[in-house]
Structures are given as C-alpha cells and as structure tokens.
Image (tube, rainbow, N blue to C red; front, top):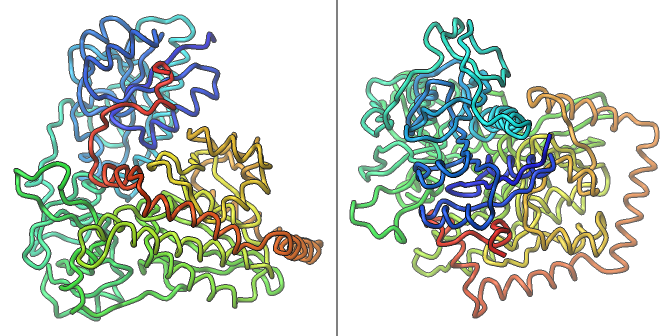
Length: 604
C-alpha cells in the first residue's frame, strides 16, 4: 500500500476526527487538517497541501464542487448505505433501530448519495446519541474508512459496484446494501429530513419512560429537546431512567412534575416512572447574538433557586444497578485479595468543583475499605476531561462571582482529587480508561500506580489547546517520572491526540487492551483480582511507599502544586486573556476563524 497525503476536512476536530487522524498517521499516511470555515479556505488548503485524498469525517455542510471535482473526497456518513440526511443518528436513536451503520461515500453533487466506497454496521444499544457516536459509530467509521483508504492507496479510483446482499453482517466493511432481514426493512431509509423539535417533543401526560428516554437521547449533546422547567423554555439532555424504588416515593405526583435532586440532576415524573435530567440549556430569543447564546449546564445549577425547594436524594456509593448516580462503588474477590471499583461517570468527562469534591469524598470513603487494589473507572464515555469549562463560564454571568475565581476553585478541587489518589499508599491503584481522557483528566489518570486503557481510547495529555493553559494536577511530577524530563517536554509541546497503543509504546500507560470493547471492564477486573492475589503484593506496596517517601523528601508534592498554580494563576488572572477567550469560544461553540497551525501543517 502506498502512503497517501490525506487532508482531513472537518467542522471541528472532534473525537471521531481525532481517532481517524491518529490511526491514519499510525498507518504511515501524511496528514493535515483544515477546519471547514469557507469554501475559499478549503480550496486554498487543497492547493497548498496537494492531497491525494480529502477525507471528511465530520461536516455540517457540503463540500464545494471546486474541491470534489479536483480531488477525490470521501465523506463519512453516520448511517448505512442508502441513508441520507442531516439527522441520521438522531432518527436511529429516536426510532429505536436495532442495527445501524456508517458509510464512506464519495462527494458529488448529491447530498449523502455519492458512490459508496465502504461501510460497516453495528448493533445499537440503549444509549444517548453522543455515547453511540463516541463508541459504536467511531469504531464502525474507523473500519469503513481504513477499508476505503486501503482501496484508494491500492490504486482504485472508482468506488466498487454496490452489491445487494441478504443483509450486512456485523462488522462488514465492504459495500453492500439491500434488505436487512434482522430489522425487517430496507437497510437504508433514503432521504431523512432534519429531525425537528415538534417531533422530539416530550408529552409528559402520555409518553412512557422508554419514549421519553428515546426522545431525550436522540437530541443529547445537540440540539437537546425543547421543553420547559418551572415554566421557562429550555432544552433538556443527559437523561437516565429512575428506579422503581425512587419513583415509588413520589407515586402520587402528576406526570411532568419535578420531584427531587441528585448529583445536580432533576427527577421528573413520567406516566409509568421517572427520569433524571442532568443537563439543560435555556432557550434563546431568535435574535440572540451567537456570542451570548445560552449553553448547557447542570440542570439543578441552571435553575438553582427553583431546585432549592426540591428534596435532595443522594445515591449511596454501593447500590442496585438500576439506581442512577454519578458515583458508584463495588467490591470483588475474597478477603485479603479484594478489589474495589470506583466509577465516576460525569457528563462529557467534565469535573466541576462540586463533582471533584464529591469524588474526593468518595475516595476517602472507599480508602477505609479492606481492599488490596482500587480501580478508578472514570466514566464509560470519558475517563475525565479535567475542569468543567461550562460551569466556569456560568460563573462569569453570576453576580459576585467570576470565571477566574471559578477556574481557581475548580483547579484546586482537581488537585485535591489527584492528591487523594497519590496519597493512597496502602494499596495499589489503577486508572482504567474505558473512554477518552484529556487535559487534566489525562494527568489525573497518571496519579494512579498503573494506567490500563482500551485500544479505542484517545488521549490528549496536554493543556495548551485551551488558550495556552499551563496545567496542574501535579503533572510536573507525574509525567517526568514516566517519560523523563525531555520526554515530558516533547509530549506537552506536540498538542496532538495519542492512541492508547502509542501511549503504551512511550511508557505513558501500562496496559493496552486490544480486545472487543464489550467485556473490557470484566477483563480489567480479572487482571486486578490476579494482582490483588499475587504473592509479591506486599513487596510491591512496600516499594511503592518507599518511593513516595523518597520523592517527598526530594521535593514535596506541595511544592509541585505551588509552582504549577503560580503559572495557572497568571492564566486565570493575568493580562493575557487567551484562556478566557478560548473557554468562551469553546462553551458557546463559536465557529473557528482559522485552523490551528499544529493541525494545518500545510500552512506552516
């Protein structure tokens, strides 16, 4: 296979684009990125980079004819062959499709209807659109894209004939189409219009919990589902089913009634149960300046005054599986060789001050348990992405507060969590990366003795992309002890996504699981149980304690923290507003004015 020059054209450098970027680079291709700002900018990028192939993993508008007529352009569409339209995955979640797929097609004058180069299918699971996109869609897109690129690199310049088969087998990467007997209908549904708010609307007096969840999950992330809380129009998201036990306490409440608060989420009654709603965004008037539009926040914090009248219903760390909560703890194994598992599933991996404080309290609580190994599981979609930029932005609009002050509180709370992990010296600690990790969340993972990641994980172990932040979470201690001073400096400067296999190669993590994503947690638990029962565990713990004592004597952790925070203080309170500008643009989803030069290497 001949290496290609591939230009990635994307609306933003999102999780899917990052994964494809890293995988294609690892396969030996030369990559550059151009954000889809304007047709003229894309045309200029093509002229500068002279790509063999343009790949578009995430676009919100069509590629101009001046580009696709000049160079082959492959578009990654989150739907099976024959599916067309801007709300492909939304419709699949809303309808409860049992199977779905990803198609790589060639751009032409038709929308999502060009020649099909490859596709891959997957089974759907009951999850939000965002969760499916980061996991199943990304994996299927990777399979199909690599197949299409391989064909192109092998000399093919036209898509292979579209074959009609009995149905696309699980994981199929070759083009196929026709009828899928497993779903009882056409594999592709043809043109599907934009899924509008009137179709997503929840009818609280009629809709079952399953229907409410399907609607809210279909709009999770963007655009949300238009509804109202306390009579105020807003978009809802991050929905979780409430247990029958919890709902029984409010059995007399009318459907639609707001009942309680847990971990910042609001419990709302349905006709046959209830749902926890974790995120909300106020509906803006049509003429609102894009720079001042509302943004997603923790629901109970967005409506803090109103939610204060509702009862708090915190969930214990150890509880039945159907009882939702952001933090969860389980224990496994015999006495003397026990493993504790602490999960912290925060929306988009964002760790606000309040979430950090709850997590630190949970860490201190589970440290009292008689375990030999403690697994830090993070969340299913993200291990952690560090401080919560949305909650910080909210502070900028709150009387008597500021974004700088909220940033300072948040980074201190993140450091407290990392410190609690570092000071857990009486047992082995392992960070288990089930999903991506970025910025402070990547360094929080390094606070554990070992880091295990699934092969699908992408790490962004740097801070500079957010307005040249310096970073904290004891990274100046944690990173050099794994990579050395020179390696740490190089990693922090490169600002690019890192695959788990690459992280393992350089020593950033300790184990990369290349097995199926399903079953990853069980395989990690098996490894942890073996670790807890190992004959030399006591020796490992003694060596760990000695190293920590020696490191502390050489340079106390408090000194690392002090030096890092001195630089962060300048980021938050200094004369350079880069961090605050970048944070504001990120939260308000402001369109990019230019592509960062570390991505657009053709512009260097």
